[in-house]
Image (cartoon, rainbow, N blue to C red):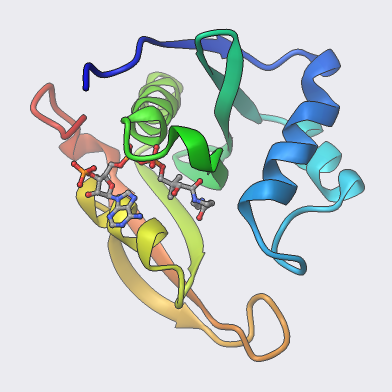
Length: 159
Ligand SMILES: CC(C)(COP(=O)(O)OP(=O)(O)OC[C@H]1O[C@@H](n2cnc3c(N)ncnc32)[C@H](O)[C@@H]1OP(=O)(O)O)[C@@H](O)C(=O)NCCC(=O)NCCS
């Protein structure tokens, strides 16, 4: 099957409810963000949010933050119907480029230790585990902290 055409665009405040619903659909209760938490990440200094559009539908989004040379991936969400078609990779690559253009040298994120697809995506893009945060999500659910030096980015990075 031909790869779908993916268009990326910046978040607009009128997208908020849709983003909230996508996040609720992508993550289990307790890990998905509440409205207030999601709003506060979107309003942070250095926050950057990109949406991926496939056909007429928003297929996913990425939300990142940055402070100095450090960039944080807050969330990357792709609706189930659009997975394994490079939507997540396109969003991630664009967010890394935006961060690098603002002087970010190192991206990091937290991921549930039991979320195998997510860990596979990060490793595919060159992220490496740097430690485990015990009980990060509460109820005994731990997170890996993962990072990637952006200086290592090149045109040969995976799609
Ligand atoms: C993780 C997620 C963002 C991946 O998005 P996606 O658009 O399907 O990812 P891509 O198509 O760009 O995948 C790129 C590569 O990542 C790896 N990967 C992605 N999903 C995978 C899966 N379910 N199982 C194994 N490897 C996977 C593969 O190496 C894949 O390359 P391949 O398809 O050639 O094998 C998506 O599954 C998702 O939204 N999950 C729920 C929310 C979540 O966990 N978000 C991530 C962190 S905040």
